[in-house]
Amino acid sequence: MIVRLIVFIAIFAIGWWLYRQFIMFKSRQSPATSEKTEKTKASKEEDKQESMVRCEQCQTFMPRSHAIHDQDAHAFCSAEHLKAFHNKAD
View 1 (cartoon, one colour):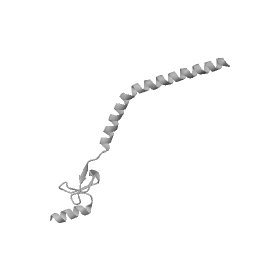
View 2 (cartoon, helix red, strand yellow):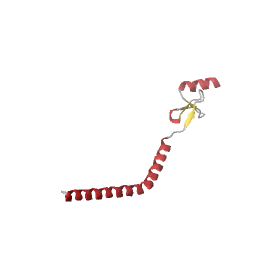
View 3 (cartoon, one colour):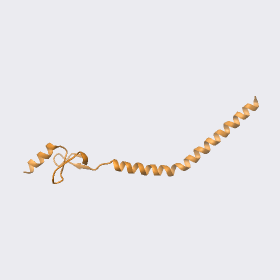
View 4 (cartoon, helix red, strand yellow):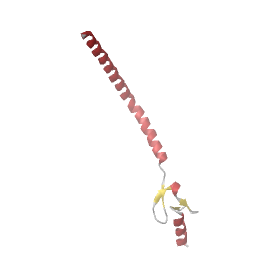
């Protein structure tokens, strides 16, 4: 019975040592891969960000893709503001 206990403790100790070695190995590799991952995340976030434009009528900011532009490249948040701006200018 004591032999089984010693064998069990030895197997547990070897397993724990292997686990710790694996964790240390992964932690050494992690900084290099985390830097690459952070750089790709940052570049993806920059790609997702869209420039904002201000409506000429109400001065509200909106994404460039949502804006309505006139011939003079003025940005507007709606067709009503586009018409109001051009009626006011005339």
